[in-house]
Length: 342
Image (cartoon, rainbow, N blue to C red):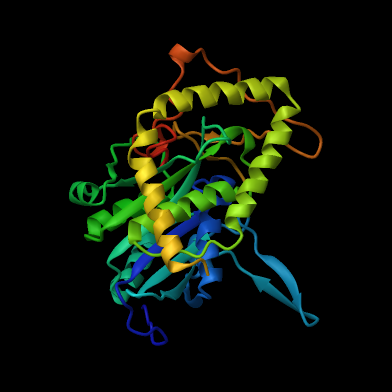
């Protein structure tokens, strides 16, 4: 039974969700929701029962000391509410947790129960996957939905992905069956540097979310963190000629694929965002992650304290998949959907 006695009536609420694990390469998606929660001082009003959905041998609880008293934090999914001020205030219901180990249908039904009780008008699920995209270029973000009308109205891709999926894909389909408008936003994270954090991918997701729901998101130090992250990866890549050549190959393929868009919608969208900000002022889960083909991957530029895993030899340009092209719908390529979901 869902009881929301402490939650006030919400204004045009949108639910924004992200889950650690297979759908969260570089922790980009879960960090994005954590950023919203922190910047807007979210208040947790509900937590799902960990016993119902998690295998504690996979997602172990943690023990910590509070004033000399030992306490336990259980892996779970929590919901909080934040109010976005401005000329047109609205509320966000933030869902942040770990991909459940079991009973996914019940898990999604419970979240949809909260959405229904709170009057949520749109569900936006954030995800990140590993792809053949260079760290030196803008992070490809693809937006997908199962609703043809919503796809047309919000300029999204209607997903046609088939293959392995995670909780992001399952939740989106559960929303579709329940008649709740739902969108998934996917960031493509370079597979050769997939260790968290990835502030550049987190920043890209937040920028796309800002456009989608028409709110101005305070970014704090994310832009500076993203620049520092790229400089650090540049330095690591420069230490290995093979890695540097591979990155250059990805850059060339990406630039060629995106040349027509460079002077069109992308520039217009960035300019609109700049105007909004100028006018308003600026106030690990074990295992791999989703990849563009729906498989698991855990390839790193630096694997462990001891060494480095080199990237695979790049395929010849004519045989190469188009890293700059959005993956059609989840795990297809980087720019579109690249997600094992939906």
